Image (cartoon, rainbow, N blue to C red; front, side):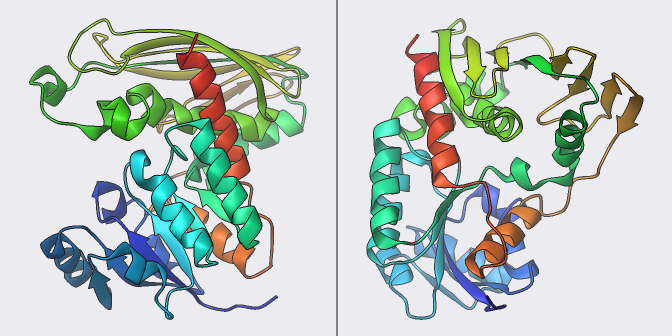
Length: 323
């Protein structure tokens, strides 16, 4: 054990890295962002200058194999996660990839095998596992405040974006780049969080359709789930509704919890006790996620947002989208 500074190399300089993740890599104790990479030199240079990163490159291999880089953060669309992760494993370096883990369960398995062989960890950026906001729900469940949990239901819908209506390019709704559409991009956050509360998803079935025709990917999904704890679940996600809703209801033998995955409203406990809770999100929102990875790499704790958990999420979404 120790407090070695983990020197990160970041592949990709897109929007997620501007506020959600990038700053956490240099704000967390015993962590630094040593080098960034983008395919376009001007983008890499601009990012490094604005965020005061020491070095930048357009060569992913050069970053991964750099002697001053200890661990890799892959912040690119899912279609490149496998390639970069395998390069990191080949270099013997720990890696975290953005969510979802990969395009398919098969790709996840290739990644897991490579990191097992290299004997270094692979993480996935399901940072909600680290947020104190969601610890409140987990504690209510573990304290038996709603008795035995029977069912969880997530209703999520929103209006189509003007860009989608206009037909603008968007990798998030291109199945070849994202593995699906907004369901894969957004529902993955909640499904992975539910795994933390109720164990792995052991069965999943679903129906998907495209109701609007704005892009190739699905825009409406309904699903049924079973978790290893015995809890069952359901959900629907629609990206062509008239308004927005993000409501999770956890139903127990003695009460219920109302919360959300993306919202910032109060969480409500109506069970053996009545309570409301609202824990403010950190800025950057991935701060505790990075902190937990650094602690894991320094031998202080085990962090649960691993490739194994990420693989289960991808598997569940694959089952849902395949019917």
